[in-house]
Each structure stands twice: as C-alpha cells, then as structure tokens.
Length: 271
Image 1 (cartoon, rainbow, N blue to C red):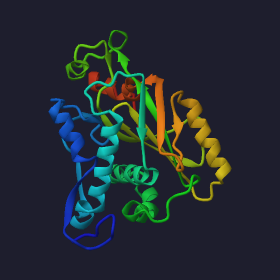
Image 2 (spheres, rainbow, N blue to C red):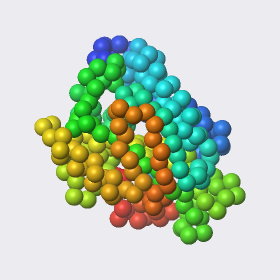
Image 3 (spheres, helix red, strand yellow):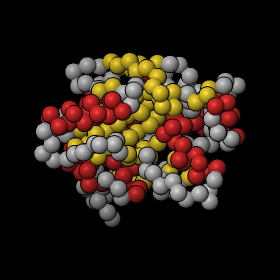
Image 4 (cartoon, rainbow, N blue to C red):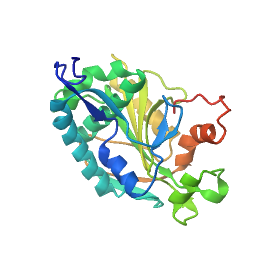
C-alpha cells in the first residue's frame, strides 16, 4: 500500500484523471478521437489518461470539487465547442480556485513523466484546502487566446483535424495539452502551460528567493512575447482576451509534423 500523492495517507489508491473526465466526455460527444499531444508517447493521442497514486478521499473529495469548479468556469467561458472561431474570449474567475485547479492538473501531468514534480510539492496544502495562497513572486498566471488556423494556408492534412472544422475554412479545435516551455531571455522560473481549446494558461513557477520586481519583469516579458496575453490579477474576477497572432497550430506544429512525418526525429520540443 503506497502513500497518496496529495494527503500522504496510506490508503487504497485510485485512478485520478490527468485532466477531468468531463473533457474526455465532451470530445466523445463530438466523435473526436484526438485528445492532444502526449509527450511521453511522443504522438497525438486519444483516450482517457489516468494516474493511480491518489487515495479515494482526495480523488472523490476536494480534487473532484476543483474539477467541478473548472467545468462551470469553462462552460461559462463558451469554449465547449467543436471549433472556436470567435476573435475574443471572456471569462469570470475565482483566482484561488482557478490557480488550485491549474496546479492540480499540471501536478497530475508532471507525475506521468517525472518532470517538475518537485515544484508542486510545497503547494499541495494550497491545492487541497486553499491555505497559504502563493504570492505573485511564487506563482503568476498569464492567459492568452490562440487564433484559428486558416486551413487553406496551413499544411494540415490529417482527416481527424479536417473533420473538426465542420465546413468552416478556419479551425480552432477543442484539444487539451499540458506541457512546459521556455521564453527567450527568461530566468528565475519554470513555465508550465495548460492548453484547453483556445485558452492557454501560462503558470510561471518562480524559483525560491525571486524578488517581486524580478517576477514582475518576467511577467512583462512573457506578455510582450505573446501579443494576446494578459496577467490574471487576484483582486479582479473578469478578463477579456483578444485573438493573438499565434494559432493553435503554432503551438502544436512540431507535434503535428511528427505525426505526419514519423521518421523525422529532429523536433524535440516539449512545448
């Protein structure tokens, strides 16, 4: 019998979804077999991904409650569509609940490949009960909206992608991806990314002893690098995102190339 990764108790461990089951269920309703890019498998994949290291109390209790919050939040934002082609996106949020959920799904993902797992351990009490909310120089959230891809201008030739456009010449599908990345010139933090349809959440997880000024500089740097990005503020609850220059395919391009050209191993980006 092993210890739960959240509460540490020795108990019978259950299977926790990496991303909430309702996202998979929504994709099944669309008859979409493509979930997103799996870095461990090194391919675009479908199916439900789980990790068996969480006790039933955590899985069916607070973690389930956080998933319920995220479902309501995403439904209200209007992203639950097969093809998001609007040029803007707005949502109302509870900062701490949103951050707790983003940390939860990113922590789940980090345990599948062993990368960055240690970064989340000090935030487990916050994920479980909201205690000791991280400061801006601990973690910051930057959100952006990616643009649809104009199909006639792209190299997409996968039938599973073309079907999602539903007759439109633009495609911005409901794909899910949790990964990590890097911004040129950045220092003092690890960047985790949670991509859900047209929304990209950048989690800037700062190193210990990073000053508020340094953290603010890095937030400005990432906003400057992503034209549509905005900093989420704790003392506000609503944000409007406008469509940026990058499309969803810009974020996936190396991975899509790996599917279309499986013998090409030159692309080794994580994000």
